[in-house]
Amino acid sequence: AQSVTQLDSQVPVFEEAPVELRCNYSSSVSVYLFWYVQYPNQGLQLLLKYLSGSTLVKGINGFEAEFNKSQTSFHLRKPSVHISDTAEYFCAVKGSGGYQKVTFGIGTKLQVIP
Amino acid sequence: DGGITQSPKYLFRKEGQNVTLSCEQNLNHDAMYWYRQDPGQGLRLIYYSQIVNDFQKGDIAEGYSVSREKKESFPLTVTSAQKNPTAFYLCASSIQGRQNEQFFGPGTRLTVL
Image 1 (cartoon, chains in turn orange, blue):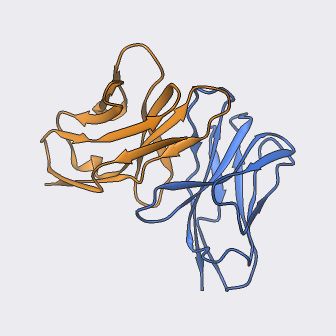
Image 2 (cartoon, rainbow over the protein chains, first blue to last red):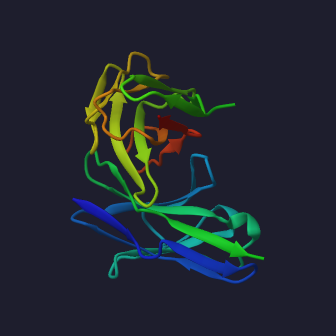
């Protein structure tokens, strides 16, 4: 079994300030990790993914995330947010053995304040 | 221009009626999925299909049915047995392979009156 915990349901941040959206996971097997973004009334779009190798992963729109195996975390960061980053962000985990479904977190709403 | 289409964007139905949500993809993906999204609950898997003419129940399949007669299409029927069908429904697809991410359609918002 696997699970994902997004620790903050909402994160307000001023424009041009840095932001970190937290994600912790649990799994009995090795995992692949993903961050998706969802704008209002739209589908999800992949921001970045960790499969293996370097623990620092860079994605689209200036976002990056760091995989920390000892802390079972995959936090998403951006050094300077823009108004257009206002959206909901989902962390997701997928086991690496056999067929494994994707488990999504409940989402974190990022509100960028002008 | 490859992608996933869902129709309609908004759907209204009376209680007790069955309704079918469309999902079509031209990405040549083998696997397709249906999720339900409710505020504060993230995405929950309803059904998935890894190959044509085969599909499996997800975590919340009760009150839903699917078919996979063509690789490109994976329609979802919300039946009258679904007790609380009002939600945002998302269809996704992926290339077979454990490391591959899912691509999502724009979603259908179903409201049952």
